[in-house]
Length: 177
Image 1 (cartoon, one colour):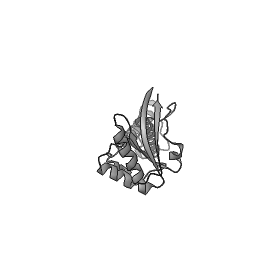
Image 2 (cartoon, rainbow, N blue to C red; image 1 turned 45 degrees about the vertical axis):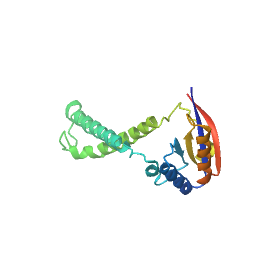
Image 3 (cartoon, rainbow, N blue to C red; image 1 turned 120 degrees about the vertical axis):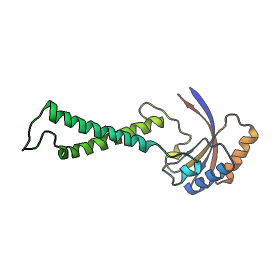
Image 4 (cartoon, rainbow, N blue to C red; image 1 turned 60 degrees about the vertical axis):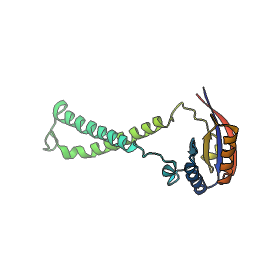
């Protein structure tokens, strides 16, 4: 079981949190994470995060769905069960389009969802501890890892959180299996 000591501040407004993150980055503070109850526009840029590659995975999953549908129907209608329906040829590509589209969307959506959960360590049977239950409702959180920091550095972080508008500052040890 891993233990992590965290110092975090709770903010009441996403704009105040965004300014605090920008100021922390300008001061070269090592931000552990930011937690919000909903996506905050501009937070990725403020944290300096790279663009997600999930769209590339979505394209690959969609391509897999397209190939599965198209090649599956090609094999079924030309080799496995060749029947002429209403004068159509065995390999009637225009009639494959609806099913091909549906499987493309299905594979892309399921694949991206599973990839998202795996990358973020979420899903069935995963217990992710929370710093404060109000973060999922109406509070915004800026968290710092306490590991390897002196008491003077921790006091500076506490002062930083209060100065940038945190309504509450807390410390917590989280345990992750």
